[in-house]
Image 1 (cartoon, rainbow, N blue to C red):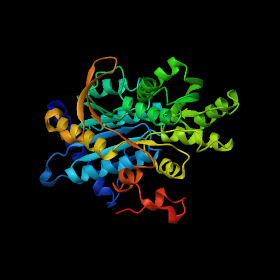
Image 2 (image 1 turned 90 degrees about the vertical axis):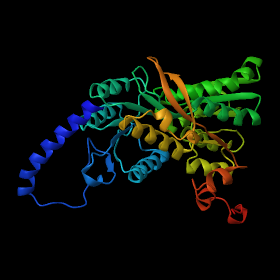
Image 3 (image 1 turned 120 degrees about the vertical axis):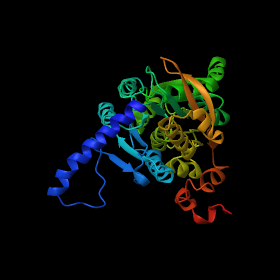
Image 4 (image 1 turned 180 degrees about the vertical axis):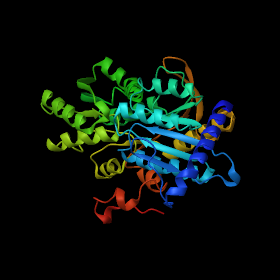
Length: 380
């Protein structure tokens, strides 16, 4: 990192020289944080004491529209303040080209480490190449960056996510017609979730117990596509559908809209992932079978620990808290990438209070909002 440190020092000197002219002609605007980059940018972290050069971590998000990403932005910011580092966060809001531009902007700012939650797993390989030209290591976050010399990957076990989802469903409907909704084909995680689905479903399919009446990808994990595909599947089967396999809570929600319109919600098992509040509500209301809770704080902390270790020239394998997960290696098409995997938890109506409410992830009154209060569980 020595080369990049010198570059940052030179940039700092130039800024100080320019600031003499700036401050002689402008009044100071206290308390403002500039938008760094092409919109949707935030900066967090206090100024380092004693003039020490501060670790700066760039974070490029493919989206922040879903509930979980709003939570994680706050987690990144809080962790930065706690550890005395700075994070510069930019979100492309589902525009792949915008993410490329924002990542280049973060690289040009001279961040010490770049964390990338890739919108397009394949295209993001070019971000890694650009960062490495500037001597900046790259950590893929949640979604694997394909076909690039990636430094590290921090993730959940997406294959297990798919297995949990499928297991929820086959336990309630071991035979019959299935609609199979896969996630966004541009996201490598969707393919891993699909692999998990197949691990559970294939033996049932091979025996002829399960018949797939429709199997479709949902681009961008879009609930509207899930709604459309489910409507088509119900039409093909004349509503004779015993189960729906969805890939996350958003696509499950879209499918449940279609089921509701046909009077089938609560009769057809379906599960998601992410433990979104809407999904938690559907679980206690009886229209969604289950979800997969992914401990976001653990994933977030793991990524930040890896980033800080890299910025300080240390080995993440020895610096990372082992209680957060386990080290594995995953093939991204170019190399076997050192990856840190955080485990996931199956959630249904029987353990939702223990997992989601007692942990503080959701509030009791939010989860049970649409349930008569005399039916709410006691939480000690």
